Image (spheres, rainbow, N blue to C red):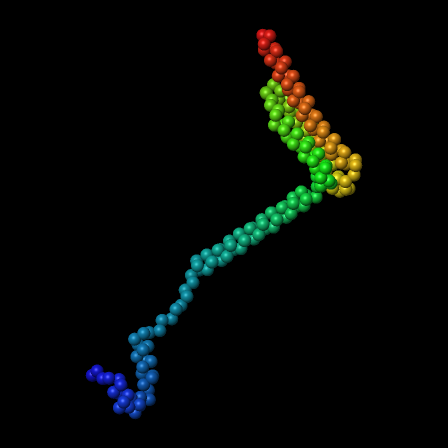
Length: 191
């Protein structure tokens, strides 16, 4: 039964043979019987539809809350950035005043770091800290005034005087704490 295809084409038997009229129809019928068509039907139950709706609502609500939170966070960030940009300091007026301001602020921080207090002197220390906080608030108000009205001799002098006063308060606090410590030591030695 095995025949060489080359031989068939040489003899031209295939070219002369004709297929029957309903050959294609019979072939498709046999093919359908061997491989039946499967119809894919999507079956949705009530539970699947409800779960899909709940999932969509949940995602929508989550996205709404997320973007609402982002817009609130962006708004508050813009306000705080604009407030910090608006205030000027002495350093913004001139480089010489920046040196003066840096000197006083460094001296204030140095004095604060040197001060040590005991439970007996806590009240004295807290009183000085309250005065320093008031002076710091005044300094911020003067800086805002410097920003709004521009640099004037009165405002610049007031800012420098504020820094001097804070430094002098710390010197006085340190000397009073020293006096209290020496007087306590003398009392302890005499006993």
